[in-house]
Length: 335
Image 1 (cartoon, rainbow, N blue to C red):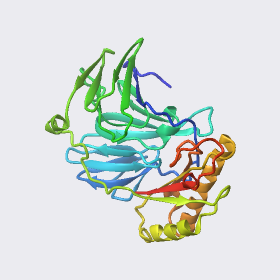
Image 2 (tube, one colour; image 1 turned 90 degrees about the vertical axis):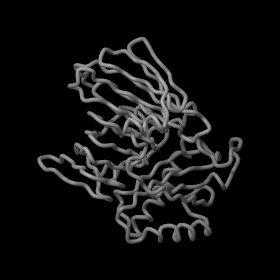
Image 3 (cartoon, rainbow, N blue to C red; image 1 turned 180 degrees about the vertical axis):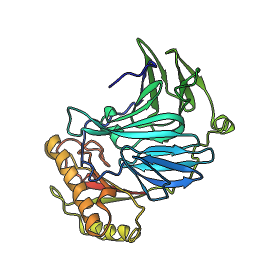
């Protein structure tokens, strides 16, 4: 990766609990994410055109996204990452391709200026290298956390990037690690801040939700409806839903029939019977089977993303080789 003239600082956002490597269904289309809310002046530079997105429209690779002085937007990315953009943002996207691993395709977001809140999705659980956030003075690697980042334009003489860790509602607290050369800083409490300056220095501090709003940072500048979720259960060793889950599935998807603005994330799981690698593949097959059924019911395939978690996230923890029906499941997240 080309290093800019301004020294880049490596940041790492980590959750103490690690998910391990997973399998994921590759993206089926160009869509990066979906606009869930658009307020005020928001526009996209797409090749040689300017596009004004509406709710339900897609964000595509190569799009440079802008929010005006009265603009804001919320986007849902393919892996469930939520981005809330305040006014004055410039942001674009690129594909990230790793050389090794079962899952190789990731995201690179580039925040050129402005303030953005990010709640990370599934990719950061798969591999922290699969999701990067770059600013003119920093590179952030994200795993399982909720934070706000704000950066001034690279041409400002006092250019800097500031990150604020937010409460994520998880039992295990998030940790933000900041490294500059051989020096590093760690913040691990809600509303702690870390600032990286143009001279390569960092400093930590403390803020509050009230202070963020006072300085013009709306934690969710545009509201988005909460996700709707359903867990489906499978017969042992295969991709056949139990009769009860099949009925629940039909009732669940009927709520969204005819809507073109819904994104589905399908996450497969297994119990601990069999080899871990085989269970990863089986969990992905289960998620893909549900995704294919959604397509057959008329939902756009490009708005469905399937992931396989294997046996790593049991609903009911068990010893190895114990068959547990509650762990043979697929989670559907509709937003």
